[in-house]
Image (cartoon, rainbow, N blue to C red; front, top):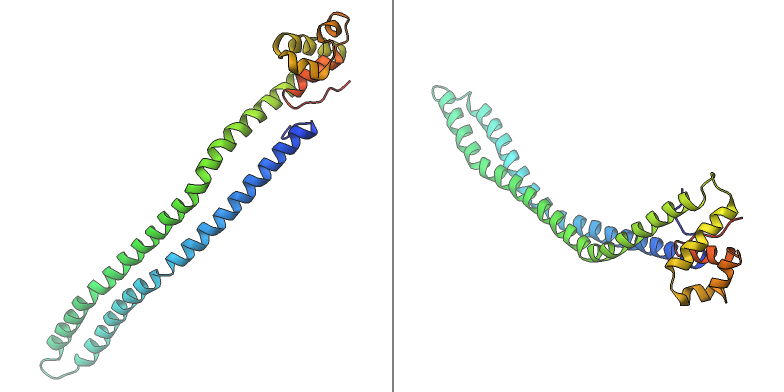
Length: 204
């Protein structure tokens, strides 16, 4: 399976682009994760509020258990104490839970925004270019390296494609006499020119 071009220059561009993209992703993912860890650490304060409410509920149960033994009014006093303290503790528990969830949500949203700002423009240019090159490379490799035709026949077809599709300046970079080569059956240089447009070498 082809991932990079066979020509050194084209392969170098693709490898450098892939490596730069990977490093860019790792860099900003690391920054976003550290930012999330920093912002989410503020949720500890909300967790303390929540835990304080829970501890207050626990204290209400303990006090209620101790006052239940008071003669005559013990049961009623125990119920009143437990209800009063629990009612006072509930807002702390609810507020702490909601505040912790809000802080974690904001930390996640801010971290994603920080990650998206540098990555979206980069990937919007890199991915279409890379996928386009990859599709062209694999399609050309599948067609040009078909096992059902000889290499000379493939060269002739590729030379014809070069003569009919490439501009004159590109043709002259590979052959001093492109039309003469084609008419005389010297197809190798023209075939090489055609394959170079998709990053493949001429193999015989």
